[in-house]
Length: 527
Image (cartoon, rainbow, N blue to C red; front, side, top):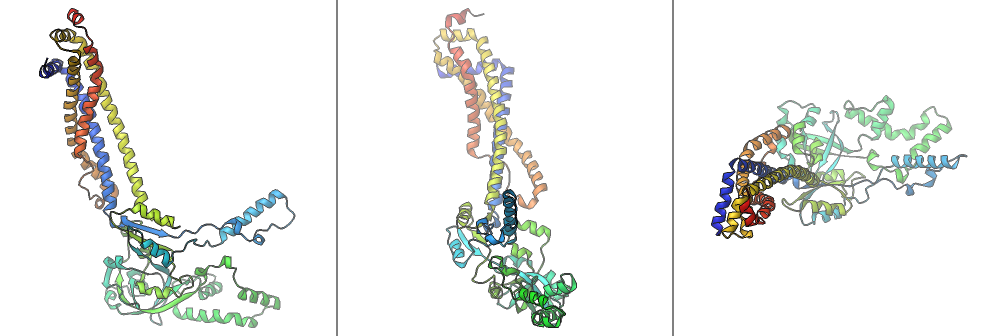
């Protein structure tokens, strides 16, 4: 018998069992549709995650920080944790451990590997790095005019291009003696009217940076008033407190103190700090200079900070006084800001480059890195797990359809035993009979797979609109820049239909083999 005749017999057998064949086709269609739909959703979500992360400039950033490790208990001076008195061994151990913990917690940790200019140059030399930005920040006070009141702000010096869109008036600094204020800092200076946005340009302000919260005048004011003065402290009051604080050690004799009390105060004022306790940023050291206001920027709202994302330079989002990179000279006068060392850096990676590899290389230098690479990997992992779960249910549905095909063809073999016998009697071989029933299974898989894939394409349209609507409500419309969350690449077309054919053909193997083993004589006697 020819292949054409066997095909005709196979299709004829399916046609005679229309209802059974139709139900089997429905099962294969549903299984293939579920499989193609879940695969397309998984592929689309992975592509969505890739696009939404990698298309944003802030994705290609690595924030570098200097970690401050805990003090090693072995480095604690023995005299600091010595347990005095007659105590038992158990109590001695407990007390010593508590003393060590207290000593360690009270000591300022020091960065093990500071971000020196050499280290910054090494980071900048990494293959994928295109730029390394560093900022200097400090507590500061700004004063407008000799009679003005110093207002506390956070000052920053560094690349300021990112705040250009926030300019309300003026421009970014171009000279070392120029400064940009936020509209809040301008308001605190008593110049909050809209007209002041332009009139303030060219105004000379005095900027004092450093340990202004720990300066001797403020400490003395707190001792005299019982509270730490805030915005109400005027420049004249601050100058007077500075004079009193400077003259006080030499004036102890005018106070009604006993010689013992005077000696104790003198010992306190002249004692040198323990190097292990040295905290230069708490020393109260300050540096000051005069600058001309060249621009005013708007303050960031909560929505602005949310849109900027967690990788935006926090120095630019928190500061209200901005100096150009040349303004670092002011910060360099502080004892903890010398030698060009910084405590953080904003590293820009080439778009499309190896972000994870760059972050790993920076961490290998002894620094802590924060980038979107870990969030990106976590998002893709979650999407992959969801897609795998959906695919598992789809495979179960297709397996159930395969069981239905096996049941259908087993029944068909029984019902068509005489027909099989006639085919064998007229010359059909076992292999041809086997091929005929396998062809029936393959045909069901081909038709059911093609219809199922087409159904998946149709369902993807309303499903995509629904998924995008939910995501827009939860994440905001601005994040949805991809056209769809479903992906149907060409290989999925071939793979889904081909897998359906493979499953149905495999399901047809047992009944086909059973049919091929039917003896012609027994088949002709059947029924």
